[in-house]
Length: 97
Image (cartoon, rainbow, N blue to C red; front, side, top):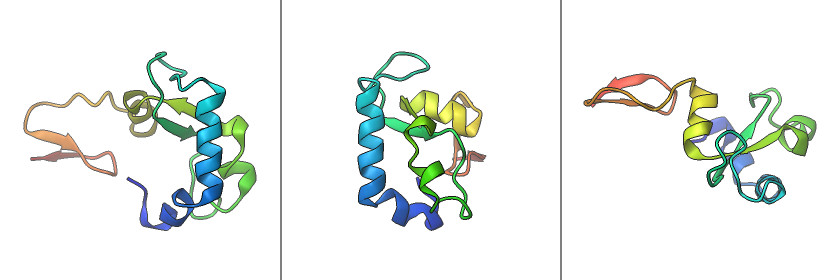
């Protein structure tokens, strides 16, 4: 889920077009595992300071198509596997259910 400061960007036409083109360019295939890509990863993490810089936020060379699991691994540094009764929150922290 997008952070509050990024919601307007992720709802913008510019992002939707860039995202769609990144997925198309790689035939909707995850670059890490070859499964179906559903998400697009920013190689340079977006911050409140750089989100309005199109050379970072919309640069096709910095957008990588990934499946959900591979995107989670890259952004949160986790495999998504936690013991029963626990889960990862939107910030990547392990929480008890």
